[in-house]
Image (cartoon, rainbow, N blue to C red):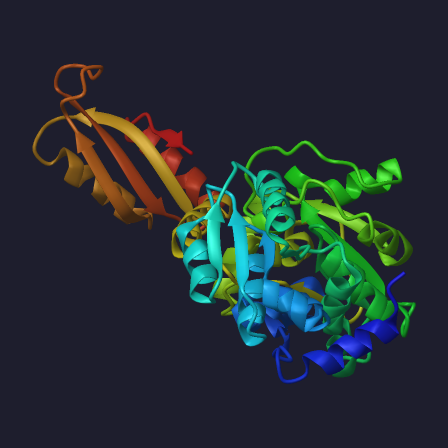
Length: 403
């Protein structure tokens, strides 16, 4: 199995190439949770995620002949960008196969770091298959995203940094995708402080680590659609990472999409940190999980911050909706001068802030003399929403909540 000695070697190798990321104490979230909470900010790392640690360490241990031939991988985001960046540092040609639905921002970032990008397949598995075919045909080195000891050792350097910055660590919360991050970090921490609790978190819709633990081996999970935590939406954990997780990880929990969205919004508003869905799952389970998983000095690993603007907009809206801070209504009213002003006046009196109004009198399904209004409101929470609905009903409207 992976050893702390390998991780310490990786730390020496990475010195000067990666950022020793900040460990930030959060007084606000600490007060809310009743325990000291710290964020390990890999969202501030080069390329915006922890992945550069493993990618650079892996490439640096290859022969000059192999690097000269070039490397290839499959990825929908962070691993692609990190490998491209590491390859550029080492003067190595790099190719990346990405799924066809990859956000344009991630594709362009990977290209800007120097990689040649090919879009292939509808999902990550399709891209992996294509990348391995190219690797065999063109004698390129395929770089795994997580299931490799060099990759795990690079990611494990995060654990060394955490222990040095916070020797009193008692609980460490880490996202789980393929398992490379948590395997490396858990090894680094538990070989020195076996009493530290290691908690792994994954998206409920892609709970491959929980399934593997139940089955006793890595098994491919059936997904429940797209996840905000796409960076950890891995259908099957690694063959090498799994036994390490079984040995060191105390508990694996899952979080729902609404909790992830609310955690992203909370980190933006209260932590002043931009964190992608995969990086926010730890805080999501602390704030909105079904049970308390932390005790004492707790570190929540924010694994990445590559949240593109379009996704950010959708996430913020979803997070506000889940917190009861956003309401979208459809209602019908009399089509006469002053009717819309009367409606907005009522909303103003009860403190609802109007984002947007759509007024349509030409819809064929409407009764003659009536108009349809779709209205987006900023609200102050679930109680405020109930107050708005009650007042509108009392005023004779029939509001329909739209999701």
